[in-house]
Length: 468
Image 1: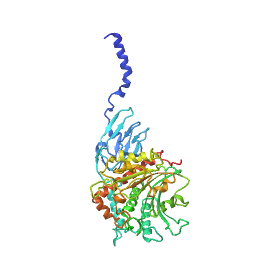
Image 2: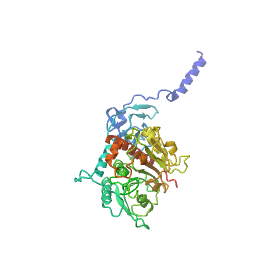
Image 3: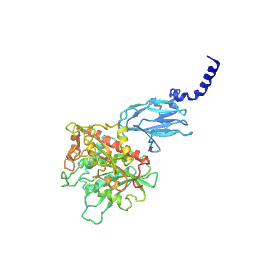
Image 4: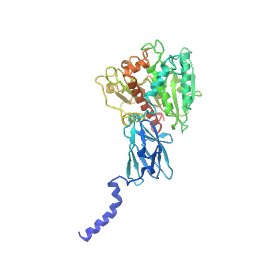
């Protein structure tokens, strides 16, 4: 080799050396992970991650970052971290929480070092009872819908028809109010007589409030707790109203428990509406009146998520062996050719990327009923998850005020003929879904979807009132 070539090679090595990390192995030199990460106060190799449950994380070391896969969720200061990345800044030790879904199979993390190299954090994972689960839902459903002489064993909160007076409805409202109050929420029973038509029933709602970081916005979730009155169409009315809508009511009770220690950006209401069966009168009374416990009109109403008729849905199977449909519709959908609201992105991300639902699953045929604008594209699709204008429940009240909304719904009409009939019982739901375990799986999935949608929307600034 000539001296000139040799000199050039030496100079090249000098200049290329700092770039070697960009092209070479990204693995960091061996580190003692327990000096940097503790999970539930244990070193990563000593802890087992339980699906659907909270775990504490301590991360130490300036500039160290921890990256999670999409279905492993980080929370800092009580709020979800959208990009799944947490970082230590300065000398502080970062306190965070980790939450997997019930469907997470790989909870391994990536530790990114200050120099850009990385280490794998291998975590053992095992199935467990999640913080929101079908078993708790079923037990609460059974307590509410069962009638017996021992009030410690069953509540008998049936016959919840809207009317004045209906002592059964009043008794149920007091029970639900006590549940939210017992968890620490500021909870009130809101009564509004709709003026101008005294023949219509009054509205009686249970409203639980949680203060947010900002005093300038409001958001919420809800379901109606009244049921179709005797003689009501199409099935002649009901008594338990198990599917419509004790199912959604109990989901709200479980959400309240799961979210009590979380922090939200906006003032948040968790609501149980009355008079949905009479034309959304309860949610309209809350949203459009001026009263102490009503929706504040001086704050931006960002979004609302609605729970109505759930559990008789995927992954449960019909007696025919086909899966029941699963509906989740975001809105408003002003233009069917384009996506109108950011909440649609969250809706799809939760189902596709976090919960890993089979988004392309179809049946050989069509389902009995569905959405308004896109049913021709979705009539055989099990996971009917998209933006649409479909109404017929309390989300319409808030959509009309500019809020972005999501409406969760399972089978109805031709796919579940007990709708609005005396056959709408918990026992019938069990029978029609192939057993208690299958019903619990179905309701657990939709509850996790709705809860995750709420947590992500809370931290997504683009989820705004469309009139702002």
